[in-house]
Image (cartoon, rainbow, N blue to C red; front, side, top):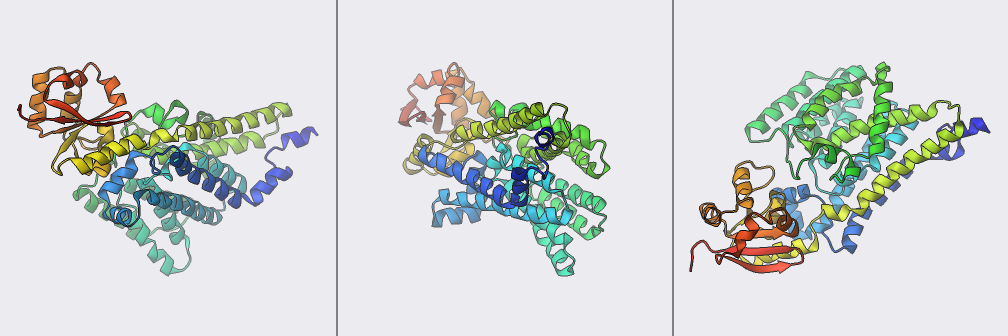
Length: 449
């Protein structure tokens, strides 16, 4: 009896053995449920189906997405990231078969991944990562094929994967080298050269080292979802990853995981935009830690069972709490109404002052120029100076110099800047021209009447 209690994740456990055999169906089912649940929640809360500011960045800058949005409604494009998420999982299972990874590790890694806020966010919004990881897995699978024709075709997703930012190209370069070393495969210098050449061209054409940021960057909050971050992983996954790191340190077969640590961790402090690959690495170590922790024989089997269920419940709680606040990651109906009003009731030439985090929403919904965004440094200092201004003469002078005629103000901005530019709106040169819910549109008259 005690042996059965100790065998929680062993094949002698009929329930767990069933999960292992049919893990592809269960993982796909869970992923589908979570990814379709997000737009469903937002639909019933009358919010936009697409979450995250990055979605609206791509909707504003991609001609293809704009064309699709014009033929359908932009919200129907939610099917794109969902499809990418499920397609990536499908290709990953094919990759696992090629790499001969253990069933247990694959199951727990994908379970932790699919339930992570990082996965839910990435594949519930139009993000670079949702495209990028599909492309790199496709590249690896094609390179693993025996027929030369398929290996030549790998050049297509490989080149496409370099189109996002320089860091993504660097990560792909390192990944191919690791693959060649660990799998004892010869990777043609041609593929590595293509990555370098394509990256140089993209960089010369203005490609950034990091794409974004699209949200206010908070290193700890963005990493641990339980602290209210946009993405990230649960606190329990962090704990499991520490166990996994201590275990893999002694295993030569998994040493390659450590190669990514010095690549990803230092760069994360420069840009939290790489949170998804960081999360994948953490969950890799967490899955290793989870499997090794519960494969061991514990002296007190009941404690082992309690620990197992506490960890599962903790991870489940993190997922549910993230879903509970998912509507906070999407533009609410009030915002969409006020920005749409601007698009119909103001001139095309107007420039809008607001918090930088609203920049992409302004560009997409209002179809007007946002004075500053989080990823453009040109007006960052001036934008902050305007919002923190307490001198009406200086404030008006700056607005005139920058040709700003519309101010878009949210409830949060009113709280943050209540002692700053908000008090200056009492001047006769400012007029509230529209409001809806927590959002207001103010007009600034460049010259006194």
